[in-house]
Length: 377
Image (cartoon, rainbow, N blue to C red):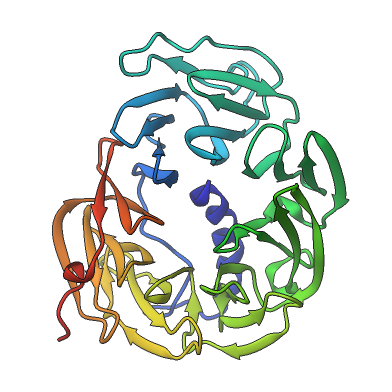
């Protein structure tokens, strides 16, 4: 799940930012307050989570609720091959709180999914059937099936290829941040190299081919955790203070980005959008800077936007949410406009569309084209 994985690195990056924190100084803080969010999505459907009710729900593209689990507290959630089939990595539950797999509720026009018991850890949902698996300290970062997946424990990287699991020691993997390449053929897992983020970061790649996932190259040192890949998959952008561009082959720094701090980044057709969040007396604000996806030249920067988050390079624009609505930014000069489209969170899909999540946990597909971008100011 993008959000839970990002929360781990956000806490780590907070320590990096603490030394320069002050009024108006960039930090890794994001707009606070419980609100529903998209855990994963694609052109076939989406997964939404409401932390207020601890309800995780899988929807199909036409808006049908396929399944729902209540009273669930996941580390990560990802779609399996296509949404809304999912794999859920569960947080350990306190004694007396049940097995942690949550309670099933009926899908739209369907019988309730049968509840199951087992050691909490990983929950696989296919159709309306839920199957728990062991490994209470296991997080699944990517999966195409129950036989082919990539995961980790606090000490190891786990790769399952056709059901055969390879275990590789991975230092500080409890704070692992997983990023998939644009074409899905490779992934990078960033972990702190030492006890604190100031000690630097390291990377471990996983190759994902037609024969399933396999262990790739190790990178001993990278300037920060990987936030996103370049559109062509040859380079990666780091998060934290003084973000930089590194080689996807060996992690060697290639150039710095003209940004003081990167809280998140997103790669897409319009370039690489870097989001930076700042605290203020009136609440957190966000700012987006767009960089060329090849030269990494800064193209445009928005002004500080109150309660704005989720900056994404989607289609020809940069998208974001603000005050519960979807907004768009012109890539040429950073001009922004808000819309009447409800959106507390968004997720871009390869079809040139954007899932916009409503406050009630349901989403709508929004086409993203040139007409969405505001005119240059």
